Image 1 (cartoon, one colour):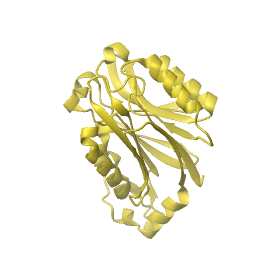
Image 2 (cartoon, one colour):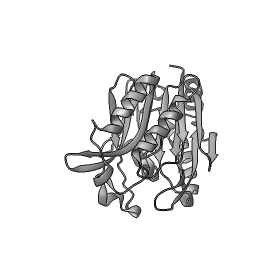
Image 3 (cartoon, helix red, strand yellow):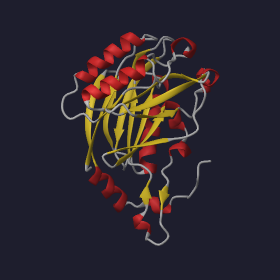
Image 4 (cartoon, helix red, strand yellow):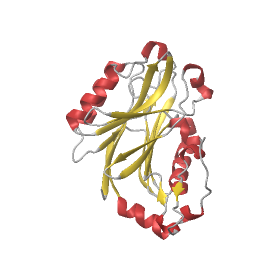
Length: 270
């Protein structure tokens, strides 16, 4: 419970080519050395950020989810990333959180990127997913959600009969999977650091590299940031597989030394 290993895969994607992407990611995942526990893939990892869900979306029993089950089981890892899902006539940009035993949770992207007409093709989700691994609580988000801090805002629970020191934070790690273009990379890097500082948590942002089918370049700039906003990992323009061991003690020490959460506004997301 004191540590958590997270592996991020910053990769180029084959445009709208599921077979090629799944084969590529299987090779990359199988190459991971050491004690992998959670492996994070980019947004729409099987297709790229495509507005063609009528052609490429799958069900939750489809090829890509079944692939995630197999890869998760064979490697003994939690595997996560988003893909196109069709359900009851609607399409979702859905992040799947796959466990090695075949059980899963999912989060449907709440904030759809209207600038690229994502809102014309997909339906927005309406609830968050906070997963648990080894006692760590992990809040899962997708790309454009990053621009909306209330959706990710840490909510603390203070029991009236106890002191504020016993407040319990909702989560310990905030993960964003993305296809975030290089032309707005300054916002990506700045907002990831802001989310870590304001929520006093680790933040993991996993982005793709390379040109997509619309000739939009993605520089990666995947980041891992500690609860005080210090960058622990950053890489631009190159593919990479990187594993970090997060320390619970460092998180607890930061929250104890700088208990800013005590002064936070109390609110509910309706």
